Length: 206
Image (cartoon, rainbow, N blue to C red):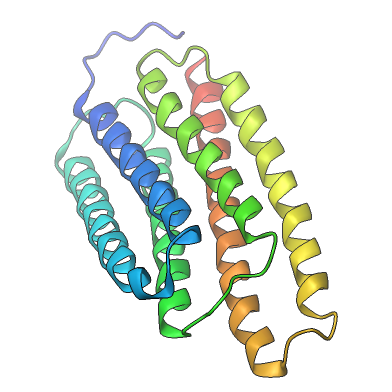
């Protein structure tokens, strides 16, 4: 790691870790949604909404710290991009749960559970990686694995689309379900954006 002659604001590390931990909470709520009765989904959506608001608060705290700090642990643009991408993940997961409730979806198509399992694993890896930003060590496997998971998510998404368009569902149901699986795919893409930003930071700091 590059030797620094100036002190750095270290609270960013804790805030990034808190933001990633909140994403793990969101991924667990997605998993809970899979096994829930339709009558229980509204309550899960309410808890997801609360988690999303907590994520917004964490992001705003990072931006506030960024604007008030003279010295930052790494480039300001990278701090902004990392915080924004973490926030995007939570937004997409909350949107997916909200759509399931708003559209009164009776049964999610087979394959959605695989999408959510990928998101849950990516959330765990992201939460494990954030503390390593302090040293920039042991991060390579993280971004490699998240990129692999995103490729897996792409394949699952394409198979889900093929399933939705096989004639089993009526047109309105296809539109509803497609929007849900598309948002879950966007969450997987956002995890990759976080991993790519971490890789950029690590390269700059090496």
